[in-house]
Image 1 (cartoon, rainbow, N blue to C red):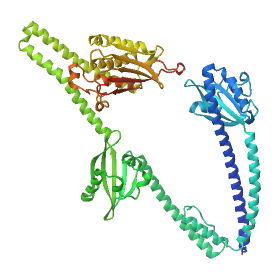
Image 2: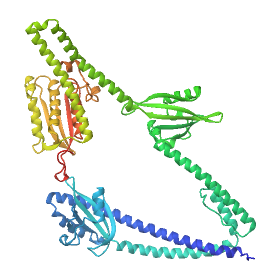
Image 3: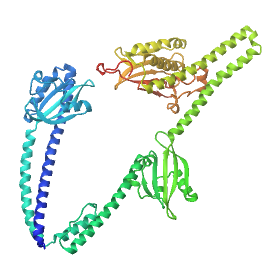
Image 4: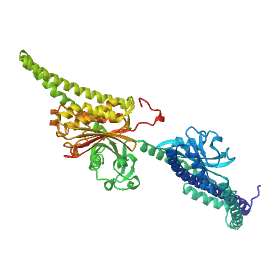
Length: 606
């Protein structure tokens, strides 16, 4: 029969092992954490130095050329020489043009260095810790892009030897080792005294019960040699296994539910029988402007006063089954329309709550309204010339054709009306073509002087301007260039200049300007006309929209000119803006991307 051991003989070696492993683990973890800390601090320090050095080097290179890089690196290296910091400037092709420690002419191509590749790919910075073949020692490197004149021309790399960091780490490791050994000896003595008074099997039982009552359901207690305690340990282990299976099933269901809620494109709100919030997904919280952490357990009526939601819940409680409605919510960019579908949650014979599904149909409703408005506008615009055509044809048929003078006058009117219809159709086809080219990226663009384009547009409108004694002033730097489709930009400018002439009083000048601002080329047409009320500014670029419908139709306009201007700007990746006030004139501005740099490789179509 196997001899039973004393509790002390069973317990003490185990305690010693646990104390040893704990001390070793803590020591290792602390040493690793400190090493990582010093590495991270050194990396941050080098990154700050690199960014400052890159900024100053870029200024010198912009003024003196790439030859200034070598002198800058030498001076920078001497300035921080006590820290043994090395500065290197590398061009995009990997050529070294400056180094504080070596002659760049003797250094190999650095395009394969990991920190340089990472800095150029990310556009932010790159870092690595490796052996330097140039200096023959391990180094930490940090590299940042070197931007000269807004373009990345190379990389500024700053490095420092790792030996200093490793020396500090060795001293810390020695101190931690001494402290860990001392802790181990003290722990061994304490464990001996503690083991004499506590039964290890009972301690394991208690620990198992505590862990099973917490979150560690994978913990299992070993069976002791004592019969009663062995039975108790088996019971605890069976209970832990059942709890593990139950919790795993609940966790899977919870994760599946969370994944479904996160992946839903619709908003979802779950309520209990007293209309308190049980769950709400991110989409619903965003729609109703709720904070997810603040809504659970609160009554819905405290969180939102949206009448449509309350009415849907009332309808569910009265009729049961399901209910649907549409609600309108105010927003910063206009009203939002939500479709709400509600259903009851039943528990046996009672109602356990309700589920509300919210779907944002704002864009759908706006699209439907835009289609209706477009059809109505096209029908209205074509109806007038068609009515005129039909009326004059009837007049000619009834005998006016026999009168040559009247027939000629009627034919001229028919020609004007048919030309108007043709112009409307051509403008609509142009808008369709612009949208298609913008979507397909098929717009033909090339670089050209901006001033010549502005002068051609002004020359086209010169006759109309002279008829109203309006002076067209062109202001544009000679060196300013555009990367655009010249025909489309010219048409946009002609539309804007023609509008300015139409709505300006006789003798008022119209100014046509161009400038470069914050990486964009701005083309602006400014007049001193009647101006546009603020209420119309957000809609004047819509198709067929007119501020003054009577005057626009009298002038023959169909309300498509500004819509064409907007789509020309969008097709170029830009936008159009307007500044205007009644009685103060208007300023329409085309904002277009600046031409690509010569080394970007962009030609013709984007």
